[in-house]
Image 1 (tube, one colour):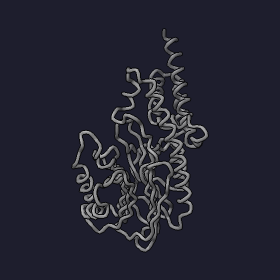
Image 2 (spheres, helix red, strand yellow):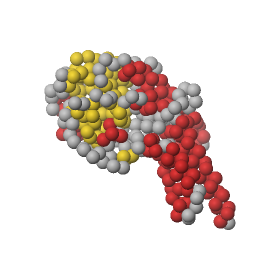
Image 3 (cartoon, one colour):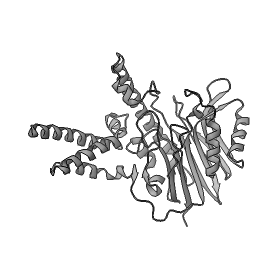
Image 4 (cartoon, one colour):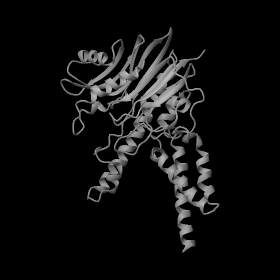
Length: 359
């Protein structure tokens, strides 16, 4: 019996070690060409956890097979440090300015039960943080957009310049993305993502005589059906629609990987052509073990990796927690502090980075 258990456990070990290796390919292979590794990249933190548990079980039983998962985990340590920072920065200091990114989930306007007080709570919370630059995704506005924007700025404490891109959904309801800045905005632009409600904008902001280009992004979501149900519920459902739901889920995931990869390539081309140093942030809707994140991050620093601490998960919705919100920057800046603000006003946590300029 022990030999049978040993063999079964070894097969399980090899399968999950192979799955972890496949996840590493997600950062290199364009999903348009081959999307299979992207599914494993999405599940990376959980595949990693299973490999860790398996290695511990082998080690407790003094089995050399523990080296299988240990070796595979070691091969991808750079991915692990994109998720978890085990050591606090040695010189954690306040920077000269703070940048926030926050997906608002439309102020929970369409959630059930409808929470009409979310907008005020979020804006008052942001006001207490007092960031110099604020990037919101999934902004929701009803009524006159100009009047509403002034109302939002007043609630935030006033004295903000703004760059807003809105899409009309109904007669007086708008969905969009916005960047607020206490520093002057001297240039504005947008990046169109054809056939998608995803949005990207860039704002040229003068910070203490130097100009920076701030890219605010909301890349393609998975647009999963029946979002009120968790992934586990969908997969564990015993009704007659289970197989169709799994197929639909798989198709939605694949289309999301492909569209984000394409959008990431477009955003990266704008980054590369920027005449100014850049800060690139927002909801990428993809993990650090993904083609989209790797494409955009190339040549840039990740504020969480440089100055964060603990687990980097920013998504807290119905589906398994993951890291999909980012603040990236180039070498003209130093990230002195990074925080994930654990407030439950949205299905995303707001993220905040402090910066100072290189001497």
